[in-house]
Each structure stands twice: as structure tokens, then as C-alpha cells.
Image (cartoon, rainbow, N blue to C red; front, side, top):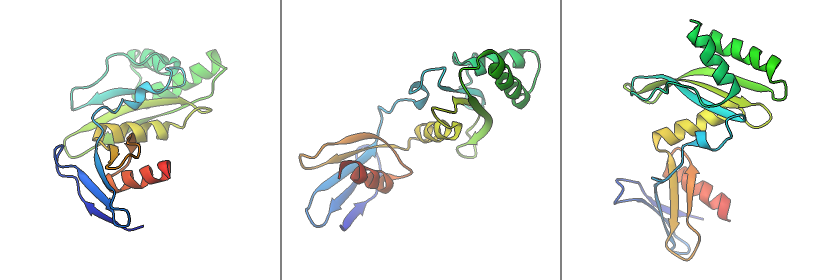
Length: 176
């Protein structure tokens, strides 16, 4: 297959990709209705907590996740972020033995002016923390896309990709 590509410019001028063989044109636009991936999991399966930010979006209290709630208690006692998470993971292994939690404290920088310090914890049997962080970062950057074909083919939204071309490739993989 060969395609002609016109890059995304604004919300009113989407990226267009045309199948040179069939003439079908696909519009690729940012998914303005994409949901925050932190809501995909039940709190006991995994959670991401924004600890600090220069963007005024810190969350005062953690999500209702046993590890992050324990971490909050250790932070209130004066521990630093890394030590508080280590102690919280140990606490949870002892008092909530039914789940195997893994987690990390990470510094996420989007550009020179926007940064976040986050704590992410997941049940190791459900998802790795890096997966939740990766999806959250893509969502926060606006790298969630909709692909809308000009023919009667099915449009698809919620495609997490670095750019329009990657979103289109994922669309083809999912619909072909």
C-alpha cells in the first residue's frame, strides 16, 4: 500500500492520509474526548498520584490505593518520596498479602517549563507501572488520536501514538 500524507496543522485542518490505490482519505485528529488513563484501573489494581508539579496540579491526597495511602502516611511522618514508597510497599506486603504491588517515583518532564513528580503503583499481575506511566504521559501530551475514514469504514478513537502516522498505522493494524 502506498499513502499520501498531509500533516496535522490545527483542529480545523486535520492530518489527511490518502490511500493512493483506493482513493480513501483518512482524517487523523487529536482525540479531545480521551479519558485520563488513571481511571482505567480500579484503585486496588493500580494508581498514579501527582506528588509535585510546577503546573499547579498536585493532588493533595492519594487515590484510594493501599500502597499510596500508606505512602501518604509515611510522607506525613517526614520521609522523602522514595523512602516513603519503599516503606509503603513493605507495609502492603505484610498487611495486604493478596496482591503483589510494584511501584516507582518518577520525574516526568514534558518540555522546559512543565514537569511532574509522580508515584505510580500497580498490581504486578495486572500491569507494569511503566505501562500506566507511558499511557498517562501520552494522554497528558495530547498524543491520543482519532482516525476517521472518508468511506463507510469504522472510525476509531483512543489511539495512543507519538504522531498521526503512527496512529494511522495502528488504525490499520486494528481494523485490517
